[in-house]
Amino acid sequence: MATALFAALFLGAGAGVNLLLVAVPATFAGALAARAAGRRLRPWTLVWAIGGAALLVVPALSDAGWPTFLAIVAALGLTGFALHGGRSWPSMLFGPIGLFDSVGTGMLWTWRGVRERASGSQGRWVPVLRTVLIALGLLVVFGALFAGADAAFADLLGSLMPDISLEQAPWRVLCFILGLFGALAVARTGAAPLRWDRMTFNPGRARGRFEWALPLIVLNLLFAAFNSIQLAVLFGGYDKVLSETGLTYAEYARQGFWQLLWATLLTLVVIGLALRWAPRDGAGDRRLVRAVLGTLCVLTLVVVASALRRMDLYVDAYGLTRLRISVAAMEIWLGAAILLIMAAGIWGARMLPRALAVSAAGFVLAFGVIRPDAVIAEQNVQRYERLDKIDVRYLRGLSADAVPALDRLPEPLRSCALRDIAEQLEDAREKSWYETSLSEARARDILAERGTSGAASCGGATRDEDYDPDADPYAP
Image (cartoon, rainbow, N blue to C red; front, side, top):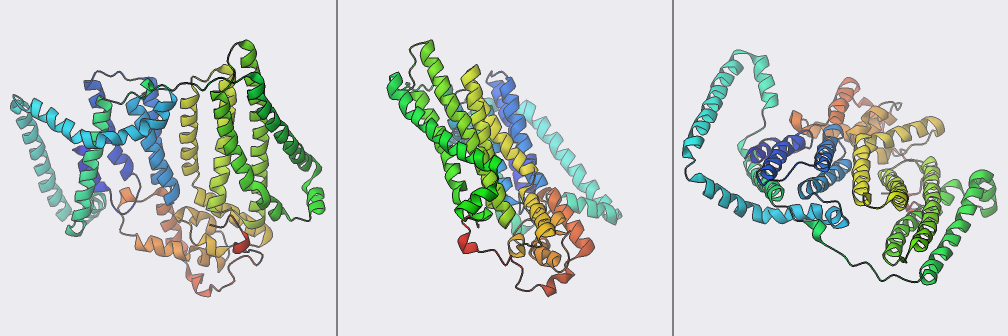
């Protein structure tokens, strides 16, 4: 009920600390239900719970919607891990899905439990209900008196209290229902989790050494040939290669980044399939598997470095965008995943599923904390200071995270870049404190101090003259 009330009161037009406020009572519901069912608190349960809470801090820091969405999805995933437990691949893959399985059964489970415990418990519930009603009555009466006696206290009270006007009633009712069902699903899962670790998969039929190793050795040779060219470019300089190919820096970067990204993803698939059919008759087979797949992982790391270097070249030529920073972050995480796979090949794969889940959640948290819109704006402002080139039309679509960096631009570029953001903040000025992010509050202070008076001078020449969106496959 606390979760439902918090959801009805605090969920509204924006995302901020309100998501964390709603998650706290739901977390206690799951913890108390698990304790009542006889489950013991394990260290990994705390890891997942703390990680989920940390991810819900992202909406309170960042105004951008896309890091917030990733953080919420990742927080739901960690909630599923905390409630279900387990360490195997099925637990990591299906744990978050199992949480939704309890949405339908949670209400029936709760009704049966309440009905069984209702008989003979009226003597305990009546005093509690009476005490709560008296406390609420005292708060309402004396709060109204103090608000009428002091305007400053009335303003403070008004800013802290949620909007419960009649216009908001349908939305509040919907949030109450969602919060109630969500908390019941968490409690139901905490009391009776699905045991995903009991799922077993038969390993693939082991292949002979020659049949298994030859395709991978050929692939390693191909990777080695490609990486030798990349190293030659790295140490020999791009000017020589570009002069021989006739490409520009941007064309060279654009030519292969997506191919290298797909090559990294497909390599992970190849490693998974190779492990399924790997020979496993003895120590010799284990050494062969480690040697072949270890070499492939090392060569793939060079591919990751090459892809990131190409993206760096492309950003120097055209600037940073949301798509570019997202795929670069994904490429970095893929490199980290390959390192974890290599570590599992040396020390054992028992912790690999959990390690990959922790690394993914950690990257989502870091991505939200750095506020990518702020990074994008900062990089483009620095590029303008260095090259006198900037795409103001793109920067207009960023969130309030970008305001501190864009505020350094000279007029009228500054006002042109901040005009749309200022209008959005003006439209959302009625949002309560719990729906407002730290970046949004800071942006309001900056815009209130300096405004966007130069926006009237904005013309059409606010995009790089060299920028061609039709020729840019990374354009959003």
